[in-house]
Length: 210
Image (cartoon, rainbow, N blue to C red; front, side, top):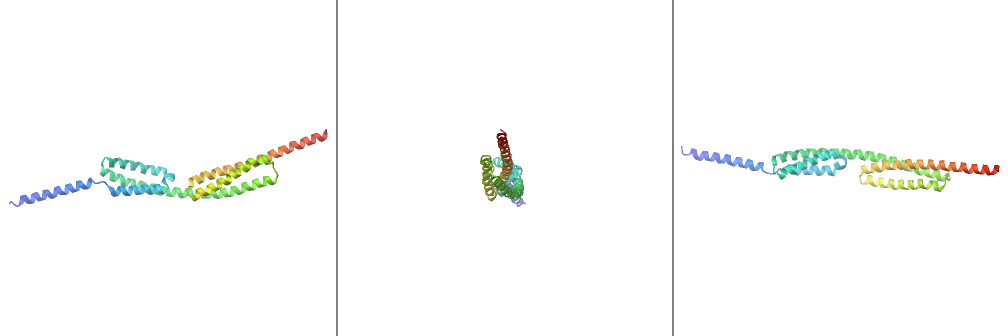
């Protein structure tokens, strides 16, 4: 009968050790989950989520801020769940960023092809105007616009090479506006030249009558 007390004491001691071990385990920061979440968030940013999936990235960053707050308060159980949610959100942001970047690349590349054609057309229009011997004073603004468009076209190529697809698309739209101004400028120069010639002819006719 005397052996029962040591047995009971041993059982109680084992239970206490188990509980303490469990409590100690719960009190540990979820380092593995946090590391995975932070790595996923950085991967999303690297994939271009800041530019091409801003909404998805913001959701992940909000969870990151929540996770930091929970860690400061040592709410490790809640922090573990938030870290898991953060990784999932970051993975989605990365996928959305990659898809958005690919779409932007396709759009910018197609626009760049249009710009090359538009530039050649504008050069042809200016050359035709010069061949028609339109007054240099009337053509100068058009020449300046064409020079600016040629510079802009080179900048567009540089943006594509640097994978700055949104900036390239914006530059492409600006260049299309420039081409339109060149065409309108030549039409205006032709109209003014024709009007000036008509006035000059009228003056000559008046002098002959006198």
